[in-house]
Length: 384
Figure 1 (cartoon, rainbow, N blue to C red):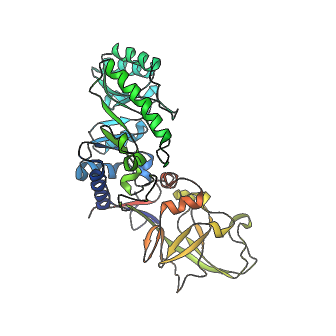
Figure 2: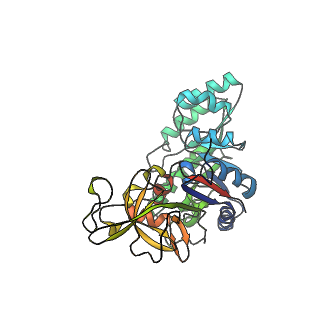
Figure 3: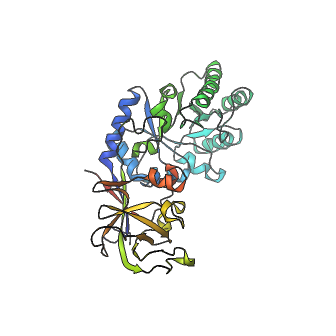
């Protein structure tokens, strides 16, 4: 029996009208001639894969999708998304038959994968659309302009089952105010584009900009921008913070399970993890590492730890277990009771906890905090 809102102890709320308003603001920023490719990856940065994507198609005019892995693309197809889905990396060769069957768009950058795709396309009587991935400095997936690209062009020309639809690259340092690296990558990308045009590929879909470049580097737009976290209100671009005035789409709450007083010198949690120096009131709350909260946001020096909100007031985390978390509520005004709502991410009264704040405590990226959230919290999708 699936979990319900009534049975959930940890709840992610996804405000879809806010998502729509964010996309409208992004479109106003990039202009009418640049398409948005929504990248549905990493469990939708905590929001789930399928439901936000379907909403974006039905209510936000998103007509192109991308994923990091074929499993994510299959979730989109299962949810009824028939629009183009570009898989941004290669897939296991064992998955090639299903890849072709589902009409996914392939990323190509070597010989072996195109040959496998073409052979399977012949067996199924299909053509497969592909996008060439140029490596311009991230050195992760792709190939360089020049001789490597020339070789791939010859390979693709010999495989009529493959239709070259697009070309793209990925930026390594778009999050920096110093655009030296970005502009160096763009110069290499332009070399690759010129080489493709000389080879007769002069009507390709060209895309380069990620979230940070979408906000801060319009010179990188080309035909489309690839966005994931940005649509959910996470602006990690350099310079002015949240210059598009995006709204946080996601909130995360749980409940107080127990409260108790612990005397100075007693220990709290496993392995004597925390020993208070004063009489301390503890709340045990219903989330933990099993829900995907970042462990690095909590240490034995609780002055450096993240907060949650209880009754509109900040309360410091003491320790994370897999299923529950200890919170210091000694200085929280009023009575804290079993069943009270705890805000992990979001607003309660005048206070707000953001994923960026948690990331700062954990010395990691905002994306890491969001993508780490597991499937265990119940997702409630708010449509109006």
